[in-house]
Length: 628
Image (tube, rainbow, N blue to C red; front, side, top):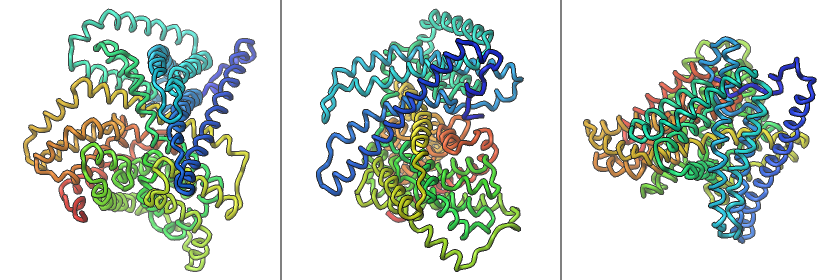
């Protein structure tokens, strides 16, 4: 697997590099991307200002800015789409290349051309319904700013058009003419077949789910087509060929998936992670933690597990949680000999392990759609997360039990004390962020801006390290990574909606209500089902779709609903962070800048331990309900 496609600047054919058309193409490409980078960086900076201004106005001045969330939401969709454009230009849309990498260079080049062409084909198909969707939004006015909602929705067709342009340029730069011609012929044949086979697909009923959401998705992913585009192509094909649903509806579902304001925490926490490293806070924190456990087998891996437990749920987004932790710990862990594959595998596993730690947005969502007490869910989520963390610590100890510690330094108490004093401002950051959420100072979306402001102040006044020249590049990097992640979430949300409209969710509920084995049988089936659902659906849409259906069945089966909520969330987390389909795993790889291939083997052991822990939590309800 790889989260990198070919980079056009590296893959351009040098033999013709001096030709005039290629020089024009490179100049146009550089100018276009420079403009998009400037716009994306500016949008992200403006989002930070808006969010922080909202916190100050509401909490300090007691005069809420009623328009702040609305404006942030409008700009956020533009930020997501421009970030997706940059991700396509850089080849940072996550993709699986486990099979492609085994091919000969010529065949691999052809498959890469197919992958880019598939993305370009989807974008070409998307522009028209995206424009129709934006036109329909023109009649709607925003409640606070009283402007047309088309200003926000136009981000979708314009972003798709820019991505299409970038994709075509990449094809021209990295693909051989013969490969492009072959792909065009294949596309024409597939298009003709689809047109004539449309009536036939409409007679297949539920078999279309297998054809599109299993067959097309699997073929796309294993052929190296970016994950988000594979989801989108399958959904587009299903709706366009087997239903009469207007395709702008799919655009609306993508909009819905990418526009959850809580996801704004993703780019903000990605930027916060970069800021922590740049200001020296990361170094201070790592040096102190290493002085405590660095001499133990797998010491910093324990720190990673504990850190994910502490900060989990702060941002409302698991991706944002990982983005806050990985940049802090990974550089030092790599210096100490940890393999990239093991690091990304453990990061993904801790993401699943800590799904129930409050204030988790998934807990809040499941409480809102099922009527369960959110305070009860918050109380119930702490101990299961601790149990899973303990099990992961055992696995880490076993894996690193033969680690060579001959070069590991043991620190004296005086040295540890001195490092602690130096690290206090950095170590206080997670507690400042969590306190801001718990005390109601900021929402889960706004809290990252408090962390950013805190880090800037500490970097300038305490550690006296702040590289102003790096800010622009950091903003662009955060926007790019976030665009790749948000595009996947948008496409997965559209696919989730299509699955629901097909009747799949109701069929699933009917099937589970007839399962034998009483409460434990129902829990066992629920674990299997939600692990599978978690592998293809983002957590919040899946909970919204299936929660109201399955929780009444759980009650009838004699399962405590709070206990069932914890089991469901953990099961979704296992699926979400498990390769080859789990979106969360690819997000962890993108955040860590690690080739997904490297983490496949190490994650098997970690996920096996996590599944064992999940079974323990499911079998012993007291772990979830003992403190209620």
